[in-house]
Length: 242
Length: 144
Image 1 (cartoon, rainbow over the protein chains, first blue to last red):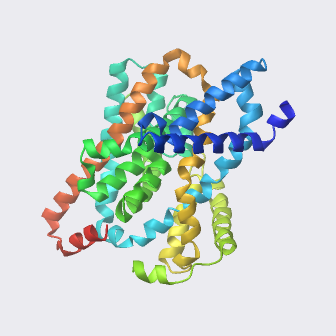
Image 2 (cartoon, each protein chain N blue to C red):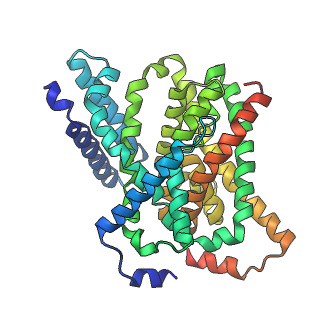
Image 3 (cartoon, helix red, strand yellow):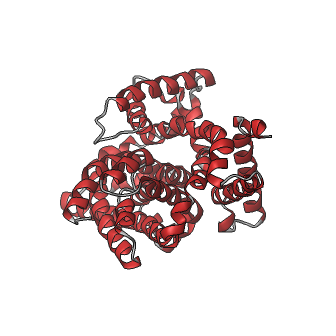
Protein backbone atom coordinates (compact mmCIF):
# COMPACT_ATOMS: atom_id res chain seq x y z
CA UNK A 1 0.00 0.00 0.00
CA UNK A 2 2.73 2.44 0.99
CA UNK A 3 4.62 1.71 -2.26
CA UNK A 4 1.54 2.74 -4.21
CA UNK A 5 1.15 5.91 -2.15
CA UNK A 6 4.77 7.01 -2.37
CA UNK A 7 4.48 7.17 -6.16
CA UNK A 8 4.09 10.80 -7.35
CA UNK A 9 0.76 9.83 -8.90
CA UNK A 10 -0.96 9.81 -5.51
CA UNK A 11 -0.10 13.44 -4.81
CA UNK A 12 -1.01 14.54 -8.33
CA UNK A 13 -4.30 12.64 -8.24
CA UNK A 14 -5.27 13.92 -4.79
CA UNK A 15 -4.50 17.55 -5.76
CA UNK A 16 -6.42 17.34 -9.02
CA UNK A 17 -9.39 15.53 -7.52
CA UNK A 18 -9.78 17.98 -4.63
CA UNK A 19 -9.32 21.06 -6.81
CA UNK A 20 -11.83 19.87 -9.40
CA UNK A 21 -14.27 18.89 -6.65
CA UNK A 22 -13.76 22.35 -5.13
CA UNK A 23 -14.47 24.02 -8.49
CA UNK A 24 -17.64 21.98 -8.88
CA UNK A 25 -18.89 22.74 -5.35
CA UNK A 26 -17.96 26.41 -5.75
CA UNK A 27 -20.06 26.58 -8.92
CA UNK A 28 -22.95 24.67 -7.36
CA UNK A 29 -23.12 27.03 -4.39
CA UNK A 30 -22.81 30.15 -6.58
CA UNK A 31 -19.41 30.98 -5.14
CA UNK A 32 -19.57 30.28 -1.38
CA UNK A 33 -16.18 31.67 -0.27
CA UNK A 34 -15.18 28.72 1.95
CA UNK A 35 -15.47 26.49 -1.13
CA UNK A 36 -12.96 28.44 -3.22
CA UNK A 37 -11.15 25.58 -4.96
CA UNK A 38 -7.69 26.50 -3.62
CA UNK A 39 -8.87 26.89 -0.03
CA UNK A 40 -11.04 23.78 -0.26
CA UNK A 41 -8.22 21.66 -1.72
CA UNK A 42 -5.78 22.88 0.95
CA UNK A 43 -8.05 22.13 3.93
CA UNK A 44 -9.44 18.86 2.58
CA UNK A 45 -5.97 17.76 1.47
CA UNK A 46 -4.59 18.21 4.99
CA UNK A 47 -7.64 16.42 6.44
CA UNK A 48 -7.25 13.49 4.03
CA UNK A 49 -3.52 13.21 4.77
CA UNK A 50 -4.17 13.37 8.52
CA UNK A 51 -6.82 10.63 8.34
CA UNK A 52 -4.85 8.33 6.04
CA UNK A 53 -1.68 8.89 8.06
CA UNK A 54 -3.52 8.16 11.29
CA UNK A 55 -4.92 4.92 9.87
CA UNK A 56 -1.38 3.80 9.10
CA UNK A 57 0.00 4.84 12.46
CA UNK A 58 1.98 7.82 11.21
CA UNK A 59 1.90 11.52 12.11
CA UNK A 60 0.41 13.86 9.53
CA UNK A 61 3.85 15.36 8.83
CA UNK A 62 5.42 11.92 8.25
CA UNK A 63 2.62 10.81 5.97
CA UNK A 64 2.79 14.11 4.07
CA UNK A 65 6.53 13.61 3.47
CA UNK A 66 6.13 10.02 2.31
CA UNK A 67 2.88 10.00 0.37
CA UNK A 68 2.03 13.51 -0.81
CA UNK A 69 5.31 15.37 -1.28
CA UNK A 70 6.61 13.47 -4.37
CA UNK A 71 3.50 14.37 -6.38
CA UNK A 72 3.15 17.78 -4.76
CA UNK A 73 6.71 18.73 -5.75
CA UNK A 74 5.96 17.76 -9.33
CA UNK A 75 3.02 20.20 -9.52
CA UNK A 76 4.90 22.80 -7.49
CA UNK A 77 7.72 22.89 -10.05
CA UNK A 78 5.35 24.22 -12.71
CA UNK A 79 4.99 27.44 -10.71
CA UNK A 80 8.36 28.37 -12.28
CA UNK A 81 7.18 28.66 -15.90
CA UNK A 82 3.83 30.00 -14.66
CA UNK A 83 5.56 32.84 -12.81
CA UNK A 84 7.84 33.89 -15.66
CA UNK A 85 4.77 33.85 -17.93
CA UNK A 86 3.68 37.11 -16.23
CA UNK A 87 6.29 38.80 -18.41
CA UNK A 88 3.74 38.59 -21.25
CA UNK A 89 0.86 40.62 -19.70
CA UNK A 90 3.52 42.97 -18.36
CA UNK A 91 5.05 43.47 -21.82
CA UNK A 92 1.62 44.08 -23.32
CA UNK A 93 1.13 47.07 -21.01
CA UNK A 94 4.56 48.60 -21.44
CA UNK A 95 2.76 51.91 -22.12
CA UNK A 96 1.71 52.11 -18.45
CA UNK A 97 5.24 51.26 -17.24
CA UNK A 98 6.72 53.96 -19.45
CA UNK A 99 4.23 56.56 -18.27
CA UNK A 100 4.07 55.77 -14.54
CA UNK A 101 7.30 53.84 -13.83
CA UNK A 102 8.55 56.14 -11.09
CA UNK A 103 5.20 56.47 -9.36
CA UNK A 104 4.85 52.68 -9.37
CA UNK A 105 8.29 52.24 -7.83
CA UNK A 106 7.74 54.88 -5.13
CA UNK A 107 4.29 53.52 -4.33
CA UNK A 108 5.70 50.06 -3.74
CA UNK A 109 8.54 51.35 -1.53
CA UNK A 110 6.30 53.64 0.54
CA UNK A 111 3.54 51.03 0.64
CA UNK A 112 6.01 48.47 1.99
CA UNK A 113 7.27 50.79 4.75
CA UNK A 114 3.75 51.78 5.85
CA UNK A 115 2.65 48.13 5.79
CA UNK A 116 5.66 47.09 7.89
CA UNK A 117 4.67 49.56 10.64
CA UNK A 118 1.06 48.39 10.46
CA UNK A 119 1.97 44.69 10.57
CA UNK A 120 4.34 45.25 13.52
CA UNK A 121 1.60 47.20 15.30
CA UNK A 122 -1.01 44.49 14.70
CA UNK A 123 1.41 41.77 15.85
CA UNK A 124 2.10 43.65 19.10
CA UNK A 125 -1.63 44.31 19.68
CA UNK A 126 -2.53 40.64 19.21
CA UNK A 127 0.34 39.75 21.55
CA UNK A 128 2.46 37.77 19.15
CA UNK A 129 5.83 36.56 20.42
CA UNK A 130 9.09 38.16 19.36
CA UNK A 131 9.84 35.37 16.89
CA UNK A 132 6.27 35.45 15.58
CA UNK A 133 6.45 39.20 14.90
CA UNK A 134 9.79 38.87 13.10
CA UNK A 135 8.31 36.09 10.97
CA UNK A 136 5.50 38.38 9.79
CA UNK A 137 7.72 41.11 8.30
CA UNK A 138 8.84 39.64 4.98
CA UNK A 139 5.55 37.98 4.00
CA UNK A 140 4.83 40.29 1.06
CA UNK A 141 7.91 38.94 -0.75
CA UNK A 142 7.64 35.78 -2.80
CA UNK A 143 8.37 32.64 -0.71
CA UNK A 144 11.92 32.07 -1.96
CA UNK A 145 12.89 35.60 -0.85
CA UNK A 146 10.70 35.78 2.26
CA UNK A 147 12.04 32.65 4.00
CA UNK A 148 15.77 33.50 4.14
CA UNK A 149 14.86 37.11 5.05
CA UNK A 150 12.70 35.89 7.91
CA UNK A 151 15.55 33.80 9.29
CA UNK A 152 17.92 36.76 8.93
CA UNK A 153 15.74 39.01 11.13
CA UNK A 154 15.21 36.33 13.80
CA UNK A 155 11.94 34.86 12.57
CA UNK A 156 10.85 31.28 11.96
CA UNK A 157 10.95 30.37 8.26
CA UNK A 158 8.11 27.82 8.60
CA UNK A 159 5.81 30.50 10.07
CA UNK A 160 6.70 32.89 7.24
CA UNK A 161 6.00 30.15 4.70
CA UNK A 162 2.57 29.71 6.26
CA UNK A 163 2.02 33.48 5.97
CA UNK A 164 3.00 33.57 2.29
CA UNK A 165 0.73 30.65 1.49
CA UNK A 166 -2.22 32.04 3.45
CA UNK A 167 -1.76 35.47 1.82
CA UNK A 168 -2.35 33.85 -1.55
CA UNK A 169 -5.25 31.72 -0.33
CA UNK A 170 -6.94 34.71 1.33
CA UNK A 171 -6.58 36.90 -1.76
CA UNK A 172 -7.83 34.11 -4.01
CA UNK A 173 -10.84 33.51 -1.77
CA UNK A 174 -11.72 37.06 -0.70
CA UNK A 175 -10.18 39.21 -3.47
CA UNK A 176 -13.51 39.89 -5.11
CA UNK A 177 -15.04 41.17 -1.88
CA UNK A 178 -11.97 43.10 -0.73
CA UNK A 179 -11.94 44.99 -4.03
CA UNK A 180 -15.61 45.83 -3.58
CA UNK A 181 -15.39 46.84 0.10
CA UNK A 182 -12.37 49.09 -0.36
CA UNK A 183 -13.43 50.30 -3.84
CA UNK A 184 -10.04 49.36 -5.28
CA UNK A 185 -11.37 49.10 -8.84
CA UNK A 186 -11.42 52.91 -9.08
CA UNK A 187 -7.74 52.84 -9.96
CA UNK A 188 -6.53 49.83 -11.97
CA UNK A 189 -2.84 50.59 -11.32
CA UNK A 190 -3.18 50.59 -7.52
CA UNK A 191 -5.54 47.62 -7.69
CA UNK A 192 -2.99 45.53 -9.58
CA UNK A 193 -0.04 46.56 -7.43
CA UNK A 194 -2.04 45.68 -4.31
CA UNK A 195 -3.07 42.26 -5.64
CA UNK A 196 0.53 41.40 -6.56
CA UNK A 197 1.88 42.62 -3.21
CA UNK A 198 -0.69 40.92 -1.00
CA UNK A 199 -1.37 37.77 -3.04
CA UNK A 200 1.93 37.05 -4.79
CA UNK A 201 1.59 35.08 -8.04
CA UNK A 202 -1.89 33.87 -7.12
CA UNK A 203 -2.95 37.49 -6.63
CA UNK A 204 -1.38 38.28 -10.00
CA UNK A 205 -3.34 35.52 -11.72
CA UNK A 206 -6.44 37.02 -10.10
CA UNK A 207 -5.44 40.49 -11.35
CA UNK A 208 -4.95 39.23 -14.93
CA UNK A 209 -8.63 38.31 -14.91
CA UNK A 210 -9.55 41.84 -13.75
CA UNK A 211 -7.98 43.50 -16.79
CA UNK A 212 -4.77 44.13 -18.69
CA UNK A 213 -3.57 47.00 -16.47
CA UNK A 214 -4.13 45.26 -13.09
CA UNK A 215 -2.52 42.10 -14.53
CA UNK A 216 0.60 43.92 -15.68
CA UNK A 217 0.85 45.92 -12.45
CA UNK A 218 0.58 42.79 -10.29
CA UNK A 219 3.48 41.27 -12.24
CA UNK A 220 5.55 44.40 -11.57
CA UNK A 221 4.67 44.22 -7.89
CA UNK A 222 5.80 40.58 -7.53
CA UNK A 223 9.26 41.45 -8.86
CA UNK A 224 9.76 44.85 -7.23
CA UNK A 225 8.33 43.87 -3.82
CA UNK A 226 10.81 40.98 -3.63
CA UNK A 227 13.76 43.30 -4.19
CA UNK A 228 12.32 46.05 -1.93
CA UNK A 229 11.85 43.54 0.90
CA UNK A 230 15.45 42.39 0.52
CA UNK A 231 16.58 45.98 1.04
CA UNK A 232 14.09 47.31 3.60
CA UNK A 233 13.13 44.46 5.96
CA UNK A 234 16.61 43.96 7.55
CA UNK A 235 16.91 47.73 8.05
CA UNK A 236 13.41 48.01 9.51
CA UNK A 237 13.97 45.10 11.90
CA UNK A 238 17.25 46.66 13.04
CA UNK A 239 15.75 50.12 13.63
CA UNK A 240 12.64 48.79 15.38
CA UNK A 241 14.70 46.37 17.52
CA UNK A 242 12.62 43.40 16.42
CA UNK B 1 -1.72 46.59 -30.69
CA UNK B 2 -3.88 43.88 -29.18
CA UNK B 3 -5.62 43.02 -32.44
CA UNK B 4 -2.31 42.79 -34.23
CA UNK B 5 -0.97 40.15 -31.83
CA UNK B 6 -4.15 38.14 -32.03
CA UNK B 7 -3.99 37.98 -35.80
CA UNK B 8 -0.45 36.63 -35.82
CA UNK B 9 -0.17 32.88 -35.51
CA UNK B 10 1.26 31.65 -32.22
CA UNK B 11 4.34 29.43 -32.25
CA UNK B 12 3.89 25.64 -31.87
CA UNK B 13 3.48 24.48 -28.26
CA UNK B 14 6.83 22.71 -28.09
CA UNK B 15 8.67 25.78 -29.40
CA UNK B 16 6.99 27.88 -26.72
CA UNK B 17 7.97 25.34 -24.06
CA UNK B 18 11.53 25.38 -25.35
CA UNK B 19 11.72 29.15 -24.87
CA UNK B 20 10.36 28.89 -21.32
CA UNK B 21 12.80 26.11 -20.49
CA UNK B 22 15.74 28.07 -21.94
CA UNK B 23 14.81 31.23 -20.02
CA UNK B 24 14.43 29.24 -16.79
CA UNK B 25 17.78 27.53 -17.35
CA UNK B 26 19.63 30.83 -17.72
CA UNK B 27 17.66 32.32 -14.81
CA UNK B 28 18.66 29.48 -12.54
CA UNK B 29 22.27 30.18 -13.35
CA UNK B 30 21.84 33.87 -12.48
CA UNK B 31 19.83 33.04 -9.35
CA UNK B 32 22.56 30.66 -8.13
CA UNK B 33 25.22 33.31 -8.50
CA UNK B 34 23.37 35.81 -6.27
CA UNK B 35 24.87 36.33 -2.79
CA UNK B 36 23.13 34.53 0.10
CA UNK B 37 22.21 37.84 1.73
CA UNK B 38 20.32 38.99 -1.37
CA UNK B 39 18.38 36.02 -2.73
CA UNK B 40 16.56 36.33 -6.05
CA UNK B 41 14.59 33.20 -6.92
CA UNK B 42 14.79 31.65 -10.38
CA UNK B 43 11.19 32.54 -11.20
CA UNK B 44 11.64 36.25 -10.40
CA UNK B 45 14.86 36.45 -12.44
CA UNK B 46 13.07 34.60 -15.26
CA UNK B 47 10.14 37.02 -15.25
CA UNK B 48 12.52 39.96 -15.65
CA UNK B 49 14.59 38.14 -18.26
CA UNK B 50 11.60 37.17 -20.41
CA UNK B 51 10.22 40.71 -20.08
CA UNK B 52 13.53 42.16 -21.29
CA UNK B 53 13.67 39.71 -24.21
CA UNK B 54 10.16 40.81 -25.23
CA UNK B 55 10.80 44.53 -24.71
CA UNK B 56 14.07 44.42 -26.67
CA UNK B 57 12.19 42.56 -29.46
CA UNK B 58 14.57 39.61 -29.30
CA UNK B 59 11.62 37.26 -29.05
CA UNK B 60 8.13 37.93 -30.32
CA UNK B 61 5.12 37.91 -28.06
CA UNK B 62 3.32 35.27 -30.15
CA UNK B 63 6.19 32.87 -29.41
CA UNK B 64 5.34 32.83 -25.68
CA UNK B 65 1.78 34.14 -25.39
CA UNK B 66 -0.58 31.16 -25.55
CA UNK B 67 1.47 28.79 -23.37
CA UNK B 68 2.03 31.57 -20.84
CA UNK B 69 -1.65 32.38 -20.72
CA UNK B 70 -2.49 28.73 -20.11
CA UNK B 71 0.06 28.50 -17.28
CA UNK B 72 -1.22 31.67 -15.60
CA UNK B 73 -4.74 30.23 -15.79
CA UNK B 74 -3.53 27.20 -13.84
CA UNK B 75 -1.83 29.06 -10.98
CA UNK B 76 -4.71 28.52 -8.55
CA UNK B 77 -4.25 24.78 -8.98
CA UNK B 78 -0.44 24.88 -9.06
CA UNK B 79 -0.58 26.45 -5.62
CA UNK B 80 -2.48 23.52 -4.04
CA UNK B 81 0.72 21.63 -3.00
CA UNK B 82 1.98 24.78 -1.22
CA UNK B 83 -1.27 24.93 0.73
CA UNK B 84 -1.16 21.25 1.60
CA UNK B 85 2.52 21.58 2.63
CA UNK B 86 1.23 23.20 5.83
CA UNK B 87 0.49 19.62 6.89
CA UNK B 88 4.22 19.28 7.59
CA UNK B 89 4.16 22.22 10.01
CA UNK B 90 0.96 21.73 11.97
CA UNK B 91 3.02 22.03 15.19
CA UNK B 92 3.22 25.81 14.70
CA UNK B 93 -0.53 25.97 15.19
CA UNK B 94 -0.23 24.54 18.71
CA UNK B 95 1.84 27.42 20.06
CA UNK B 96 0.23 30.59 18.78
CA UNK B 97 -1.69 29.41 15.74
CA UNK B 98 -4.87 31.45 16.14
CA UNK B 99 -2.92 34.66 16.80
CA UNK B 100 -0.75 34.01 13.74
CA UNK B 101 -3.75 33.41 11.50
CA UNK B 102 -5.40 36.62 12.73
CA UNK B 103 -2.24 38.64 12.07
CA UNK B 104 -1.80 37.06 8.63
CA UNK B 105 -5.40 37.80 7.58
CA UNK B 106 -5.08 41.43 8.73
CA UNK B 107 -1.62 41.75 7.17
CA UNK B 108 -2.94 40.54 3.82
CA UNK B 109 -5.68 43.16 3.86
CA UNK B 110 -3.21 45.86 5.02
CA UNK B 111 -0.77 45.02 2.20
CA UNK B 112 -3.52 45.11 -0.41
CA UNK B 113 -5.20 48.30 0.74
CA UNK B 114 -2.11 50.29 1.75
CA UNK B 115 -0.38 49.55 -1.57
CA UNK B 116 -3.48 50.40 -3.60
CA UNK B 117 -4.21 53.63 -1.73
CA UNK B 118 -0.57 54.77 -1.71
CA UNK B 119 -0.50 54.32 -5.47
CA UNK B 120 -3.73 56.24 -5.93
CA UNK B 121 -2.41 59.11 -3.80
CA UNK B 122 0.96 59.28 -5.59
CA UNK B 123 -0.72 59.13 -9.02
CA UNK B 124 -2.93 62.07 -8.05
CA UNK B 125 0.05 64.03 -6.73
CA UNK B 126 2.22 63.31 -9.75
CA UNK B 127 -0.51 64.45 -12.07
CA UNK B 128 -0.90 67.69 -10.13
CA UNK B 129 2.82 68.38 -10.07
CA UNK B 130 3.81 67.44 -13.56
CA UNK B 131 0.59 68.33 -15.40
CA UNK B 132 0.39 65.09 -17.27
CA UNK B 133 -1.94 65.22 -20.24
CA UNK B 134 -5.00 63.25 -19.23
CA UNK B 135 -5.66 61.98 -22.75
CA UNK B 136 -3.60 58.82 -22.46
CA UNK B 137 -5.02 58.11 -19.03
CA UNK B 138 -8.52 57.95 -20.44
CA UNK B 139 -7.41 55.78 -23.28
CA UNK B 140 -5.79 53.22 -21.01
CA UNK B 141 -8.95 53.16 -18.91
CA UNK B 142 -10.98 52.37 -21.99
CA UNK B 143 -8.60 49.59 -23.02
CA UNK B 144 -9.39 47.90 -19.78
